[in-house]
Length: 95
Image (cartoon, rainbow, N blue to C red):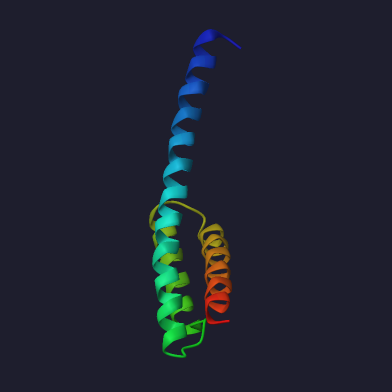
């Protein structure tokens, strides 16, 4: 590998690392809000899951993914993973 290729690879990887860090911070912020939702649901005896909202969010995210040239199926899997974790947190708060 030439020095130029190595330097370019490191530059690209540095950008990826920065994006990964941003993703972690955005997810942490998202979970702060979902924890608040979980507490509110528990206080008002609402179910941890909201299948109608989840379906709307998945459809919305699939559309956003398509517009961003990202595989909508991947976006759905990613959001479903997050939703499952949120529901688990809501169940724990309720319990």
